[in-house]
Length: 172
Figure: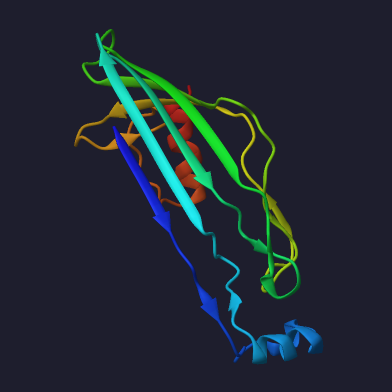
């Protein structure tokens, strides 16, 4: 189990670079006032836990954010958000002694906006991840290397001709 919580307050004044990105009214306001920085979020938290039962691991994790800054000179902020993830993984000893298969997914599938495209230095909206199912298989090769694909070890820095021949060796 783990848990983290952070409280922060970042303020700044006097833009010294990329001033062409700001309107004259915003630059004048910033020159005479302390403003919140664009990555400022008052409260951030995360927590998680896992439980191992007969080679099967159940896990859950969550993140919380009080909302990043937005609006004219970052004087406003977006709503808070929470994301909860759950997962299950199991060690299969059928083919090889160490093959783990993992499934993770976002539980509530809530649409939330991380940034709305307003504020200082923010030019496009961004959203948190939607529900996704992540399936992964772990294969430990000759030198205990980690391979998510489960394919035999092949060097990644070969030319395209050699790569296509290697793929034909793997997938006859």
